[in-house]
Image (cartoon, rainbow, N blue to C red; front, side):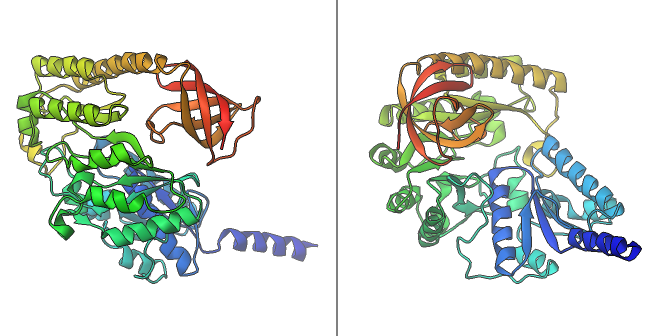
Length: 446
């Protein structure tokens, strides 16, 4: 009896200690994509790999963009190092942007991590995990998003000189992925049930300059719309200076391309834009957005802003507030300025107090909340094509083509009155609306 009990304990211990690799992802959609590629490579080498579940080997894909993200990454590393000390996990590896940017500091401060890797060291990371890097695995990923949508990273790195941004330090120069590789990846994703592709890069609008000697996003889109099974293509992270206007024409004529664009504008006061090295002005930016509206009248424009940048005066902030009121963005996010080492702006005095930064961010978001509520009220009684992302409580949760996952409006549909499958589309009539949520009833399911 005692022998049997010891045997059972031993078997339980062995089952907990099998070589399962747990990939933990922090930060933006680009990191999500990188984790999925890593997991695809590990699976191809026969490894047991999971995403943010239990595993005795842990890989933390970190973010190093701004202070809050860096703190979250460091806290996550420390949390897993504690688990290692307790014997819950055996090994901890750290990769991603924080590791790329601060590897010597991290090795000194948290030396018991088994190994640190930068953003371009995937083959070395795989080798440390007992796997081989397989060049032939174009487009092979283990997606971690709901089955109906996936991210498609069309380029890596950034050539822009923005004063506040550390991404070029962590990701290097802009490198476009060839059109044929992206089309192949899109075909593999749709074969697995993906219906919506979200195109991501540090700067979508720079796409192709290195490979084709021209901005070639429009041609990429024309190739992607030919992929069978794909219903929506969404554009994230465009840049205002040098925007390729032929993209708008493709968006206008191709129903698969969502009438949506995410274009981080950061600020609008000319002195701040100049100091930020954004390569544009208030007049040029306003004209560009009006061209968007004129060419694609139904377009939903999402932007992000930074408040509290060095030297931002009350007059600069008032200019920004007035402009937000005037432009009435469908979607808007606001960040407080983070003073980042080795960026151009780090040479400036971080002279806006944290409390003032937060006050300004709150004012912008209160203003946007009212704008969003007003725009959402206009949708009541109208019908929209909606994709169902998940079921939550008594609601099916979906999105229109004007909304991106995680950051935009969601459409809530009473699950007691109908049945919908994740990933399917439905025509939905909007019956009520709040600041950032829509409520609807199904008119027709596809």
